[in-house]
Length: 227
Image (cartoon, helix red, strand yellow):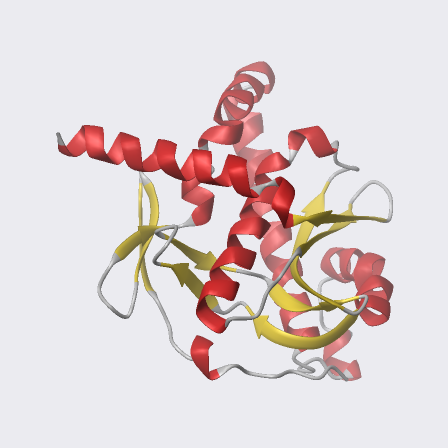
């Protein structure tokens, strides 16, 4: 159904390690770079800490686990669908809650995604010294874009998810460095538990400066630890 062009520049895997300090990746050249999510983790740390105190740690852990599992399941279905690995009979085997979320965004996927260049492929940047895996890099409404699939209990306030925009901007920068293909557009596709869907389209140039600030902040902290 979708035209998937596999790029030889991305034909590799990255070893990863996750500790209490976050996740790191080892590049083919042996460099160790933090994941972009680890670099951006301070963005929402205070808000999350405050929320956990407000609702109680036990409730917060339950909600966080449910949200994480929900997101993982949706990602798996989206990936399989884009790779044309879900025949009709297999679609019936998907858990009802996951299938319901997927069908809330399926029409947007069908109508907007064109040629696909990367699905869950590892990326890294020697310039930015970060790494990670983008959900999908493909044409969205005719323009090459980084596309991120997410779930949410309800519609997101854009002011609260600036880290998502920086994260997808990082993937755009890494992809361009590795392939030479320029990406200016970033797209967030939310499947909502309370509601249908939320599609947010942005331009990466608005988020390059704050992304670099968070990268500098991360490495300054690492250098202080070493010193």
